[in-house]
Image: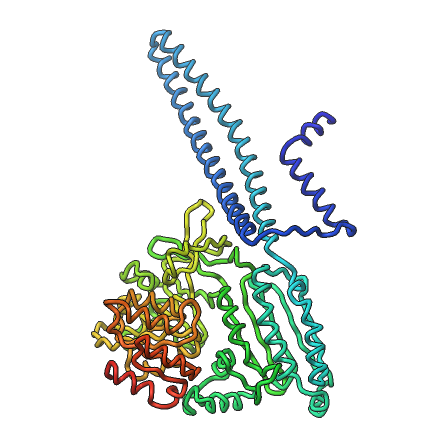
Length: 611
């Protein structure tokens, strides 16, 4: 028994188990302090890539072991054939030399089978150990990217105390989920947005003590900052119990600032109204102070959430308070995805950007003006085939039920028809080579367990592409039952603006006049679209990331084939230097925000490309 124990304790698997137990035991000792080593972000990213490759390579061992099992089965069949051959030779009374050769062949076959069996057992054991080790390494590297939420919010309690004292208010900050693990890059990006929201909540949300008491509230207001993992996502909520935001006053403010017409404002739902809070420079405060009103800085928060593949929305109840809800990925290095089959190839949807997946029966599909849709929860959702969006194939889908992925942005919701659902999987994100630029509808790549590459879809891009297809005459039906009547091709306009609210406002305004409108999220995205698609007119903002409006106009007007495209610049800031630069760069019109509530924009468009 002692010899057996000594032998078992010397195996690599037991050594690894012992080391893991020792490490776990030492980690539990209260006197052991956490040691910190400075490592560059580049090194951590490199480690993450290598750990992912190690995990993929380890997965190759099991298929190899399976192939050896197949070889073993063939050898068993060979053994039976040799046995039958020996019996037949014995019956035929063939010469003794042939019988000897057959015995030697059977003996060699048996020796090979025994060696193969031993090696198979060893390989399977090694494959299990390697897979376990690679998985542990992978998880440890991921953990090295994570920090507790408390590390990023340490300065907030003092900040709230100082602001409350300055404003003669009583405010209590509750931080929930301090130990929640957050990707260190996301945690760093969260600091500025959360600072803006918390400052605005104290200044513009929480009422003075005497006002709160008169309303039957405690004199001390409460701010709640909560972080938790929910549904494979990082959920962060900033909520106050202040006076909230009156939707009617917000509606009046929007009209007063001449962003939309009164008629359009009355038609906006409450959630659509709240989206105006995230416009650059928009504020409901009556005056600008050192501590600004609700809305100032919220565009930064919105942009940050979108950059990391998340969302930010605001909700409010007058007299009860306002809440801001971040929905962010747990880590930027690994994402949970839904794998789908499109035209025989696997693609990945970030699970956080999917609203729902459904199976739609062909009989549930309706057609209006050559647009197919189905109804879900009393809402009509437009359908388009993933083949057409990705420019893979335009054939009909013949199955009776269609797998549909429902995706959306802040104002549009669409159903993307795929060939098959393949299940969920965690993928290590691999950024595309920057020399490729922005690849339409694709955000990144990853490696599958067998080492094959897979593309991760950009949901925001897909929504824009689907919206463009639904508003063009090139849309192909996902099933055969549709009206084939041709639609006259309208004039095509590209709207370039980094604000989703402004983009959708301009798009709806122009589409109501019969124009075919496409959108781009920044100057570089717009420039890529202009070079690959024909447009009759370009409408651009000034201040945008990656390439501003002045640079975009300069690129268009300096291009031999594109310089004839008319360009309109619309800016929220009526700065003379921007106006001069825009017109000098070649813009045909330079308009300000007032063009949204009068006919200036439409008159300029009609003047340049007609009705």
